[in-house]
Image (cartoon, helix red, strand yellow):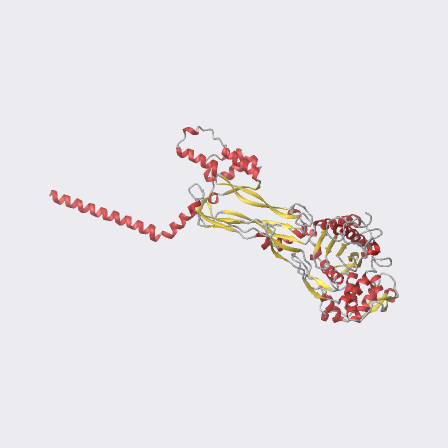
Length: 631
């Protein structure tokens, strides 16, 4: 009996042991096989971390390496509310003044809140992460860190349990932390603002944290976004329960590649000269807008590009539509500046010579059922005089003689109706209709600058081609890309687009254009003291709602100097000027102001025949001459 009882007990024990081991085996299979992937993923979420390393955005520099836009290191201050326990008020009292926040709102942000993340999982404050402040300086962060280190809780910490001491130590060291960030600043303010452009900050969620990225919205900041932004890096690592990285378990560490510096052709000294001259013109003539461009004809390099009103890139919330870069975005009828196209084309084809005579009909010319007018009553004028006195009728007769297709071809070759390709956003094509869409009067109107629409940059590019021996260069505004240490990654070279007219024709046109800024020409006010200048005026009635608006004009003067060996080409255009509206009267003096100040800065040698009153030259832009004549 006793033996049987012991046997039964042994059998029961064996059964219990078998069941226990079976349950344990099932549990092991469940954990290691059936739920292995799910549990591994949750374990990784608790200990494995991936961090994006945001690259530093590159600088934008002028031709002399002056900084126009740069990025400075700042910090984003964050908190892990789960590490604070019930001490939100203590923490808020210590750091709220440093973050310039009020204590009640900071207490609320430091209090853990239960919610759902993007995956529908229940989390506390978005994976223990809340942002408290952006663009915090290193100095302020050091004060915050010191305030956290010196936190007092009104307790005798020596008597606390080990776990409580560890909690307070973790609170002080890890509850408040920072993430590296960067702030875009513009040291020269609004100078060249429309060229530089402005940025915005885009934020993306990554592993429960917010990643900020600076993204260009206008100007070079936008057009060179890829080059400026660089390439992000990343780090895969593991952390302990206190979220401290276990460096020995770091899997991957790919450093970010900083963005490249973009060096412009813009010279901030010349940019300032142009902005200053245009601002003076605004005071005198109160136009709706005014633009100025300075270009090297030989290379296409743009030394200055100004459109007033402009904007300050550091204040994007103040930017208005009228602050756009009108040099490339707006198209207008060019008026008489377009006469250089028809006259140079006719000279190039041998259709006319500079001395050929045309009857300008004393100011009224009937053609194709329309009456064409001149601003002055003119009789017989030579080809040269048609440009000198800016005769619409004379230009129309040259256009008729050249022919529709040839006129279109030359206009196209000069770049009208197509973008220049300048690396700035928002450039317009302009309007140049194909011949099949011309009306009967188009052949007479287009030579006068009507029935065609251009950008200010296109018109300057055409004039620069005449100044450059008939060779048209692509406008350049970016010189090179370089690393932070100055090593060049890519250099952009001057690019010839095409030979529009022959060099001989170019010389003929230069001689003709020299007569404009002289006595008897339409821009005598543009004449320079120590240089022979050449150029062309324009006064075009504005088109509004498909009709010409009475009393509203686009006035312009585009010229270059020294005429026989051009160094710079300058465009000045006013939109609805007051106190006069003829291009030579209102824009000629602005051209003269810009030209003489640029000549001094660039040390351009005066024309030998005009050295009597030559100004003192300053700067170090030429090895040929430093000082000539009197100041």
